[in-house]
Image (cartoon, rainbow, N blue to C red; front, side, top):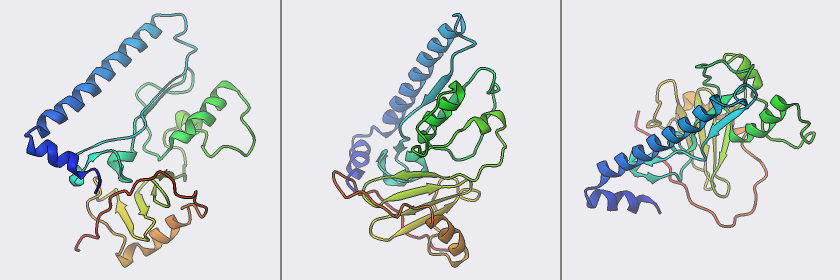
Length: 221
């Protein structure tokens, strides 16, 4: 694939460990700087009436599945941090494993601030229900689009990926957290795949500047 040469070059130069160290150092530096910002906020008069939202735009593969990049529909590249502090709503230290999307940020902010967003024009969901109760009932999924007709759909338990050429991947996160065992061709999971396929968009934007994401072949069982 197009981005595999990056990992090959890093390996050939004997820099794989150092490259991971550099990535972790960048993360640590960002964490420290965020801490300084939050610390300054806590010492200000705005500490009790300021909503904090922290997120990133993508994950990153550091050699997993022979990849050194973000360009895929797998968990490593599509899962991001999403942290909320909403005074009077969120509880310190609380977390939720329910699948959400960055499209949810705007409708959630609108809900928290009492704003009226455009009616029937938002794709995202209001996350305040999970802020108030992280274990609340939640049947939403999270969709990622990568290039023309390439989609990844994440439910609480499964990730289903379908590509423009018709190939598919399905991973069970209860048994396979890092998505090594592709279950797409396993008849036992045909029902799960059929259900998730209903949430894949039926309308596709025409191809323009796009990428071809990598995929995994079904694993032997």
